[in-house]
Structure formats: C-alpha cells, structure tokens
Length: 489
Image (cartoon, rainbow, N blue to C red):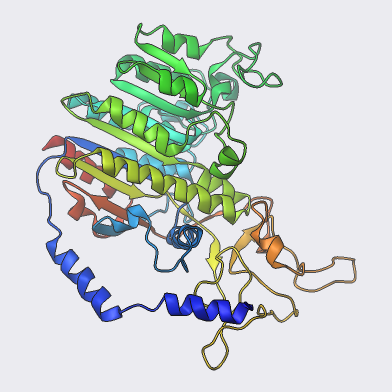
C-alpha cells in the first residue's frame, strides 16, 4: 500500500460526528459539579517547563503511540474540569526562572529569579540581604493544620522547584555546603534544610535525584563507582536522615523503595544528580522508579494520615530536555508526568482531594507549518494539496530543504539557512529517520548553548474542592491562596 492510500484510510478512520461529539461534551460540562467544601488533601503537580505547546505535542505523540492520528487524544490532566492560566514573570525579569516561579506557587509571593522562598527585596546570592526575609511555604501550613507532607521530583530533590517546599535561600545554586561562597555565613545549604525539614515537619516522603549533595566528597556513590559525594563538610546527610528516628529510611533503587515498610519515612535518592529521562529509564531497564510509581508510593503512605496531606510532584526533566533542544525526551517525560496524574486521580477521592496540575514556566518550542492531520509529531511537515488531499513529499523551506513540525526559537540546534563562504554547510537536509531519532535536536533559529525559557502564561488544570477558583488568568502566586483556602476551611 502506498503512502497516499494509507493516509486516505487513516483519514476515513478519523471521521468524527462533530455535532454528536459537541453535544456530548456540553452535556458532560453541565453535569460537572463544583465542590465547595474543605480539602482533606492537596496534590500539586508541576511539570517544569510544560507550556501549552508542550502539552499539545505530548498529547499528539501519546495518541500516535496508541495508533491514532493523535490530535483527538486527550492527556489525563487535560480532562480535569476547571482550567485557567498563570502569569509567570518574576519581579525582576520578564522571562522567569524556576526558583522565582516555584516560590510564587509555594508561598503566595512573587520574587526575583534565582532565589528560593525569600522576598523580592533580597539580592540574589547575598546571604546577609536574606536575613529576616524568609517566606513560609505551604509545607508549614500543612504542618499547622495537622497534615503530613511529601515532595517528589525527577530532578535533584535539592533543585529549585522541589526546594521551595522545604527550604529558603538567596541562591538556588546553594544545593550543598560546597556551593556556598565564603561570605555566606548564616546561610544553610538546601540539602541540609531538607534533613531539618525531616526533623521539624511531618515530611513522610522525599523522593528524587541529587544523592551527591547528601554525601561527603570522600564517599563513593553507592551505585556509580566513578562518582563521589559533593559535600565538603564531611557530613553524611543520608545517615543523618536515618538518625532522626527508627522509622526514617533511605533508599537508592526502585527495588528498595518497594520494599520499604508501610510506616517508614522515606528519603529516596535515585541518582547522583538528576534522575533518568523516562525514555532512557525504559530503554536501559534501570532499577529506578517512574514518576507514577513514586507518586503511588507517596499517596499510599500519606493517605494513612487521618488529618490529610499535602504532596508536591514535579516532572522536572521536561525542562532539561527542552534546554537541550531535544523535544522527544521532553514530550515522553510529559507523558510520564501525565501517568503520575492518572495514578493520583485513581487513588484519591475527588470530594476530598484538590488536585492541581500546572507548570512553573514555558519554553520556546514551536509547533509549525501546515502538516496534515495525523502527520507524525516528531516528523517532517507533509501537508495537503489544493484539493485537501495529503501530499506524499515533505514541504520545503526557501532553502529547498525539508523542515520538521517542531523547532525551537533558540538553542543548540541552530544552523544557518544557507551555505556560507566560511564553510558553514547551512541547514542540514533533514530526513524522516533523522528527525524521528530520540537523540535528535530540533532546529533552532538563534544559536545558544542551551535553549531558554519562554515568558508565556502556563495553564492550570484542577479538580476537587476549590478547583473552580482556578479559572481565568491570574498571577502565579494566586495558586497558593487557593491551596491555602482549601486547607484552612
């Protein structure tokens, strides 16, 4: 069967009764009930760097992986009944960073880029300026209202977004004591603050990467003999966690995580730095838990608290793949993030659990051209002819070379459009096989070593008590007050 015949069959299979579909959606929307009461539990999902373009492309990829054209598919979190948008700028920059945006969500206060849970008057990297400027986070509210708490990330657990749950710092980079400058007397590294949170708050679960920030320089990593810890103070913070009580346990593999006792308070550190991308975790069959598995583990333990819980779950590596100009891994990690949301919905009661899904900021990935319906989202643009029928050959740009549906405004994939006298061969002649490779870096317009964040609004999706308050366009800090209201009722 040639490609045109195959596309014709696919188009026939994708015929939709739009009237029936629209009326069914309207009926479902009318039946959706606002839950006004208090929330026993709050689960906050943050996919780092997941703007609407990312979620749309991930939706299509997920649908195509299931054998459909992709466009009609829906991610689990996209089915949540209440949606809105958050403005992401930091107080000193138009395009934000994760520390400032996550601080807004966790404390209700917007602040500068690069700082964690301190107010907007603090000078980034200046310890003295942070004295007395600490902002309390939602973790402290959970403790005040008798709830247990947990934090999960596929990034280092000391990275900017997860750190805003339990730490305060004038620099997001101060993850271990060796990161602090000599004039930072009076400030504490982020890893040490996590251990203190384990002592001071009802923090039952902390799962992610970043093992090196908890181990001394002289200590060999338990899984990688070529790596050691990063701490200069010779403190073993994993041992310090275990020393809090007989219930405090540490694990470093998925196998150990699943063997943990039902009452254990678990610090899981699964990589020296960030956890593996989902694509690589599956390909290598690594003994490392997925985000969905960590989420299920946390909810199972936190649910034992009769007073309820607060849980923050971050899909941290969506952002990292975008920075590398690698859309495939960003989208696969978005789908893995969606799997975690599905687990949470299945394990909780919508009458008593507020679930919020959002992002801290966006990126510069573009979804472009005029590809036909069902065109592989990771593929070259193949459009339709004047008669509306699919074309067999990929479209070409002005340089007479094909281009892909996904690209970036800036980043490591940038090449000039035409050959130059100095020997630059110009934009590569892309093939279907090349752009479909998981390692492919999408072409970018502006050459940078790393792709940047974007300044666009990000979506908020919500379900449960108080979810209806998250419709409309709001400052990102508003999310905190919705969570606070749900927990205090």
